[in-house]
Image (tube, rainbow, N blue to C red; front, side):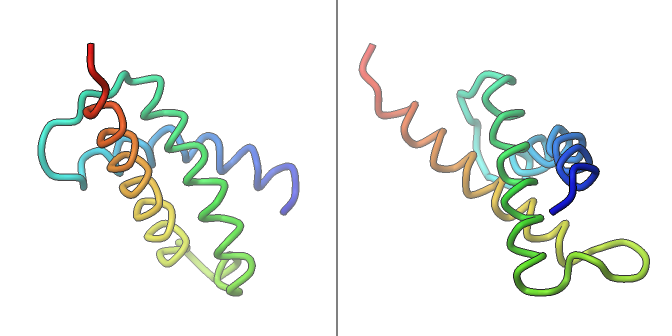
Length: 89
């Protein structure tokens, strides 16, 4: 993964976190900064997984990589929402 790929993943991660949150049903009690952090992590991890699988550099839009990133963000949002929901105040 090159430096440009890391910066691109971070920028895309801002959007990926929002998309991941939209995919998860129900209301999530997460602050926006946590959604962004999850999105950036999911974008980086999705890019890494796509590189390992060999689908990171395809002609046109990398739909498989984008799907991996959104799926990982949705999983991350679900886990974070579940952990935050179980806390007692």
